[in-house]
Length: 192
Image (cartoon, rainbow, N blue to C red):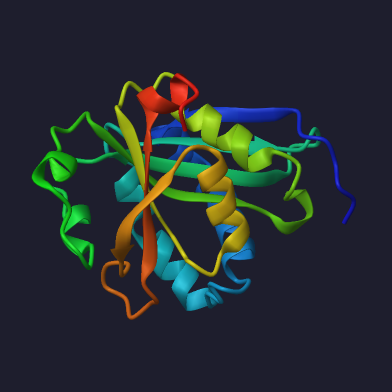
């Protein structure tokens, strides 16, 4: 497959992302079938079982990257954490109350960010990340990353994320994941 230049990275709300579910699923399936994830078709189907409901969340936002010919090559999506989120409860070690406090606006949860193999290393992930967060209005971004996903972890650190703990993805027997936090105010000031 030839590597092509990207001409579009598009921000999407929930209804637009729901209409593009096949593109999200294609990118996810290709990216997460690889090590260290090794997801099967059943894992992929399970991951997208709740996607239609997720896109109805009023704080859901997404980004898709396409080639000039319209081929979907990268995606990112997430939503703002609600005050009753269980995300903080899943950490293996508790964090202080001032860190875990949520008000429905404070923290954006970056649920997925993936780029198909032939287009990696070309800045697509960073463009998706920036498009997704543009105009967000949250104080910070929270994500989980597989510790064996070295390139992803390195990219997040380069973008200003810091590891704040470890958690096991909800409802799975998966390996512990690193929980990383990006303070958007610090990042905007170039303090990483």
